[in-house]
Length: 429
Ligand SMILES: Cc1cc2nc3c(=O)[nH]c(=O)nc-3n(C[C@H](O)[C@H](O)[C@H](O)COP(=O)(O)OP(=O)(O)OC[C@H]3O[C@@H](n4cnc5c(N)ncnc54)[C@H](O)[C@@H]3O)c2cc1C
Image (cartoon, rainbow, N blue to C red; front, side):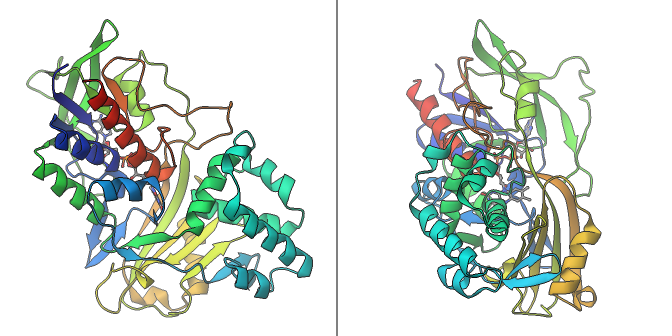
């Protein structure tokens, strides 16, 4: 085997795998189709405000935390308190996110309080693997009879996993994530771009080569082994945050540039992986989606309203700047979300009207991101649909991303699979 590794995709997965591999002596080249690195972890600076791509929270005890610690990359920010409102119809209740607030919220009667307290304590010590063959809906059916307790459970599963598909989602992974979220999350100072930039610096320091604005269009293979990649034309991006346009390579319209390599790591989404290598039996995946309204205000009209969660509707509201450095002095950055692939800007604006009246006169910048892919693969119950592993059946081909199963979900899965892929590449010689 040669010591050269090609990584396709410069998001968190591609970048962290590159650092592991280059530090271990491999010659690593990352091809990224966009002009910039970071993928969905990018942060856009607008008028001094740092906009992550929708609400991003870093799980403090997750795989991502361990990977970044191993790589010597600090994650700084604030740990938000789950203190605010639960929204049920037009009613607002103290959010029952702690033992004390479960006891004191008017959301529950006495019986429901006892049921919720018992569940709250049980979830902390539960073994999620025991429930891997159930859906979230089946787990709730088996464990909660009170209607409001059931609504709260659905809401906290949404909060922890971003998924609004209790009938499809596996209870094992969802419970594991809920336990992780109880241990706390960090809203990252300066946005997730800070993590991207630190990974980039570490990669540069260890000699990784970067080729941006460059799309890989196929992976060449022969006799069951990888032979290299083919590059497409130059990418020209338009001004929108998320759009890009591919220009064909006019110098040779029939053939792109071929680059030989016997080790390729695809740190891309599963549909791109499928396009790049048609002969691998890729599993079907169901994406986890969210629409997000991100708003920068010159000042927060209601400084005490920093968090609210829909109980009967899949709504999210959090003022991330209340906990992390994301704005100029006195400013505020809010994320509103609707879990799932639907939702309108108007419905999220109506929430801000209620929670932060007067906000419309204070807007510095805002954007609505409909139907974003939060995760490329919903984790389903065992036996329904398995995620891909980092080592593929094709010799020399590896995958990493939030759809690859080496532990965790969301960015934790991206980090865990990046580490697993790098380890496997190094072990292969
Ligand atoms: C609204 C929203 C909220 C989120 N909230 C959280 C959260 O709270 N906590 C959490 O842990 N995670 C969260 N996430 C998920 C997290 O952002 C992702 O899991 C993580 O960024 C995925 O990293 P990745 O490297 O696997 O994939 P990506 O970031 O998607 O990177 C893939 C890269 O590959 C490039 N690429 C694709 N095709 C090609 C090609 N053919 N050639 C070259 N390059 C290519 C892409 O341009 C991209 O840069 C959220 C995501 C969204 C959208």
